[in-house]
Amino acid sequence: MRDFGFVTATVTGERYADMLQNRIIPSLADKHLLERTFFMQDGAPPHIARRVKDLLRRSFGDDRVLSRHFHHAWPPRYPDLSTCDYWLWGYLKSQVYRDRPTSLGMLKDNIRLQCLTITPDMLYSAVHNIIPRLQLLLRNDGEHIEHFL
Image 1 (cartoon, helix red, strand yellow):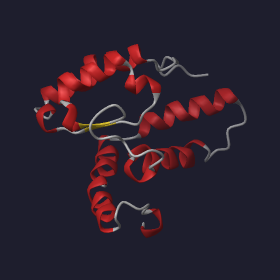
Image 2: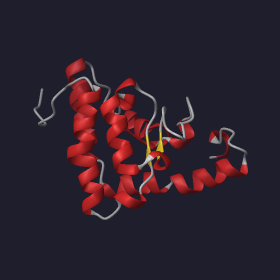
Image 3: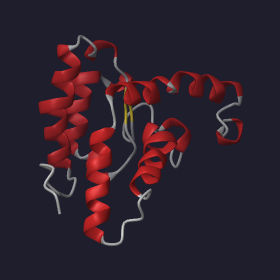
Image 4: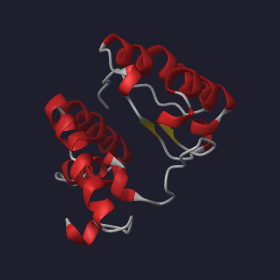
């Protein structure tokens, strides 16, 4: 197996809070985006740990966080709003399985390698696509929109 510098770890509330506090929030602040960012996350247990909720409230306020235990809850099981669900996982799956991995090690290597090939332009395009998706959701009274896309 190749070493890509990745470390495998379970996402816990502490690890998630550290990532937010030490990477995500400072990056948004450095780019002068923190004050106008709406932070969206699902209700996974690490996302609603007390330290995470406190950090998000201090950084974004209750009104700019879409998550369980905030004023605006993330819609449960709603793939139309998640960039990972409507783009990233499908893209990665198609790339990772292109050469039909035959072992768990090969599969992990393919995943790591393909993650490294995702460019900032690809991410920007995927995230920017949320605007027309939200407009379509509004026109359809919040109903699922996958059949329109």
